[in-house]
Length: 284
Length: 332
Ligand SMILES: Nc1ncnc2c1ncn2[C@@H]1O[C@H](COP(=O)(O)OP(=O)(O)OP(=O)(O)O)[C@@H](O)[C@H]1O
Ligand SMILES: [Mg+2]
Image (cartoon, rainbow over all chains, first blue to last red; front, side):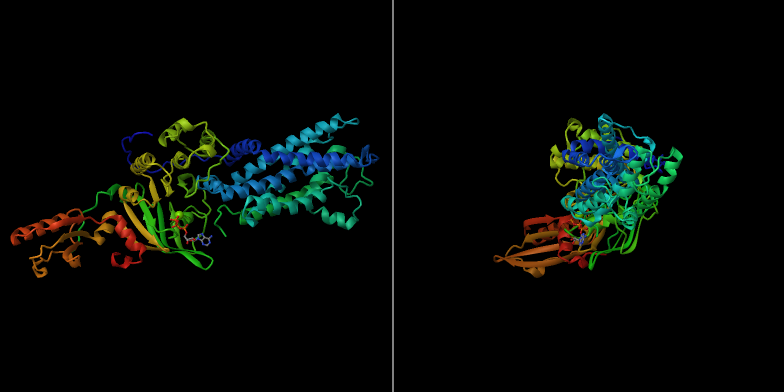
């Protein structure tokens, strides 16, 4: 340890330059990625989508939209909810554990704003969702009738919005539970509901029109549909039957309601997290 | 006789000239029906260390958590740089840091990674080398946090709190778990922070720590402050004890009255023991005056003060008295 130096006279504090919250978010994302990679069980979250992908391949190959069969459409839907598995699973788990071990409290007292802390976990969910998406896109391309997404930007948008919605959902679970194990259990409920309503595990074609509309208000179906549309270039937002191939502008116009649903969920969950998030194990 | 303390050397005039960086006024804090903090008030100015002592569960950490912005006061006000710290808003958060009672480190990162992360989050941080040097962890940079010993983690906690060059720092039992060397090093670091003008709130169960470092201190018990003031104020209220065994041939009525002192005579094992509790006079000198008066008296009476004992007031005495709930005796 160092020796005492001559005491400096107390001075009026200089105003400090602000660290940009964006920079802080990106920096925390980097650490989140390091931790995610070291935290081995997190890789299970990567296996789950691959498993569902495999089951989707067993679906009948008859074309339903353009040249794409039900199995392929389901696979595309699956891509839409990769971030659901990472977001709800990982975020709820680690943030509960970190709250209980005072890591979150430590970050807050050292002056890191909540937005950067939440942004960091959204960042890692996004990065790993995107990596897995690219990997699966590679698999799809390597298949006999391989295809590339017709609208990669829409695919990217779906992964990004999904990462935000589902990470926020994972964060919203944490105030309800006391420890990381409970967080995993508690997050299973919304995760399963959202998985089965995504169209990424089983097709939602059999649902009656009204049921489809209601399910479409949950965030997972819009996320899945965006990927299906991105891959096929067809307006699948009203169901597969009678879906038409449309141009880029038409596709984005057709996507607006789905984008709005995701945006709405981001707003609502963002508010819930901002209001109810607990930083301190003794709180509440 | 009244105590007229000269300005204690701890009250630096240049410090008192500054606005308080932290002020807590009549803070009450409730957990449901349980009131953990029942009307606590204090101020901390730049360059000043306020020691918040107290029994387990007294409400020290709760008070600090309120300052850190984790909870809103049930009633009363807290201000940091004149701002409400709830939610650690911009304008407060860049200028404040803390050592929590529990660690809060990311166990899967190395020491180096931990410090690098904290640096990149801060506006004008110390260098990693300087920080680790300060807390004596230079040799541990590559070690994973989970592999550090308890005391090493505590050092890292302190390092992280110093790293952002805070103007206000809350230290909740910072030396708990440190070895003697680490503790002394920490005192040196804290002293230096004070000299640099940092406003410091320190809680500790090591009373020596508070004795050495605190400009002012408060002792809490069950949510209330029992005694508050400079170390001198607090100790002077308790008094020094001068005791001796009375020779058999001296009647108790011959014992002298001393200014500002109370006499008590006890019978123990067939012998009489006289104890003077000296509260009057300057805290540093009153024991001397009492003893010299007693020696003069003994000389005059041709007797001896057998088994003479002088016991200064210690913070521990005061602490125990507060913990016993007898604080009213000595509070001002
Ligand atoms: N969430 C809570 N619900 C109910 N009681 C609580 C809660 N948090 C703290 N308490 C109680 O508030 C009181 C004050 O706790 P606090 O942690 O502030 O004490 P402390 O002075 O820091 O004690 P120590 O010296 O042991 O750290 C304790 O009796 C504690 O049990
Ligand atoms: Mg405490």
